[in-house]
Structures are given as C-alpha cells and as structure tokens.
Image (tube, rainbow, N blue to C red; front, side, top):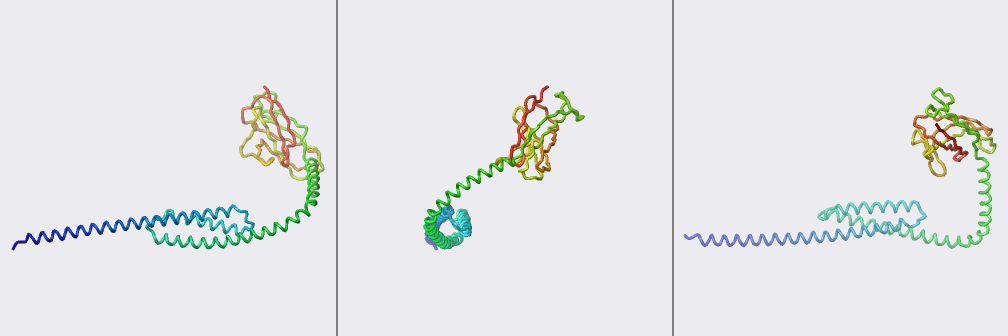
Amino acid sequence: MNKKPLIISLIIILLVAIVALVAFTMRQKQQMNEMVEQLEFEKEALEDEYEDLAIQFDGYQQMDIQNDSLQDQLAKEQQRVRDLLEELRITKVTNARRIAALKKELATVRAVMVGYVRQIDSLNNTNQRLTQENQQYRIENQQITQVNTQLSEENTHLTKVVTRAAMLQVSNFSVLPLNKRDRKTSVFNAIQKIQFTYTIQRNITCEPGEKMVYLSIRRPDGEVMQKNPNHLFEYENGQVPYSVRQSLEYAGEELTATMYWSVEEILQQGTYTADFFIDGNLCGTFTFSLEK
C-alpha cells in the first residue's frame, strides 16, 4: 500500500493548521495592541481630566475665601487630587481595574468640588451684600476716620516723644589697656585685656529693672570683634553682632559700669568704634585708638 498520498495530505493539513494558528496569533496580537492603545488613550484622557481639576482647585485656592474651614477643606481636596494624579501617572496602562477605580475617584472629587463651589458662591453673594451695606457706612464714617487719623498721628508723635525720652544714654566712656597682670600698659604688644568704663545717664522716665547692655567693638577695618559668631542681638528688625554684654539692675539713677575684652587675637593699630545698645536702642557711639 502506497502511504505517500497520506503523508502529503497530513503535511498539507499540518501546514494549513500552522497558517491558521499564525493568523489567529497575529489577530490576537493586533487586538491586544488595539486594546492597549485604547487603554493608553483612556488613561491619558483621565490624566487630562485630573490635571484640569487640579487647575480648578488652584484657582479657588488663590481666591480670598473668608472661611478658614472651607479653605482647609479645599487644600485637602487639592492635595488629594494631586496624589491621585501622581498615582495615575505611575499606574501601568494594563492595570484596568485600578484605572477604573481612579476614574470613580475622579467623579467623587468632582461631586465634592460642586459642593465647595456652591459654598464659595454663597459666601461671595453674602460678601457682596455686606459690601453694599458697608458702603453707606463708609461715607458716614469718613469724617470720623479723618478725626481718628489726626488723633492717631498726634498719639504717634507723642509716643515717639515719650519713647525718645525713655531711651537710655551712655556717656563718660573710657578705655584702659591692661597687661597680663591687669595693670595699665602703654605697650601695644603687651595688651592682654581692654577695660571699657561707661556711665548710663539718669533717666526717671525709663522703666526700671534688669537691663542688658550690648557693646559692639568695631576694629579699624570695620569688622566687629567677636568670640563667637552666634553672639547676636535684635536691632531694628535685624540681628547685630556684639563683642561683650553685661546685665545691670537699673533704677533710673546714673549708673557707672565696666566691661572687659580679653585679647586673644592680633590687635590692629588704628581707630576703633564702640557702640552701646540697651533695650533695642543705640545709646552711644564712641571711638578710641590703639597705636604702637
């Protein structure tokens, strides 16, 4: 019996099956690619919607909403949108279940925003009504405001006068170079300590009590002499370095005190400047010279 025709038939059937399988596989791959493309499109569209919602929240956050609770709620929802958007961006396009969940979350956030928008509109309407009501009071109060302004200016002037009167003043400043035995020396290279003596003038308008006196010593090159760069104090909305400080009990009467600077650096020759600060005020500026 000749088996050749049978073999040929089997080969043909096998080839037909392979061709069909390949065609099916290619069709499945094409369908899969189309599905992935569709998911990518839907994911990108969802990202765009989240970004639009985030922009809307930014717009409302920039509004002057006179309600702290509502402002906090908006901030929380805004952060929630940002977190969800970030999660969406890192979610794989094939994770259809999570993307669907994020789509539902978007609908929920939108519904919440609608409620916030209504509250904001209600607040705006109330503010407009109050603005109209207040407008007539502004006209009536204009004259009173002018009078109050004048009184305020007078009070400010009086306050400045009182403040100036209460400011302490430093006088009788003197400098004494000392050697290692704490004796006066005129030898420049033998100076181991510098004694600063000063007097706080009598001032009965100043509030008595403990006073911190800051002394800022500036070298001839303009730099402040310091032992520690953290030695700073508040002055005119800023921080000023000081060299030494001293706490004194001031009772309104003239008070003489002494401070010392221990020389641990190489002294510069020339003119030094000594600034005294008390109660946040510059109370005296003096100069002295150290020469060989």
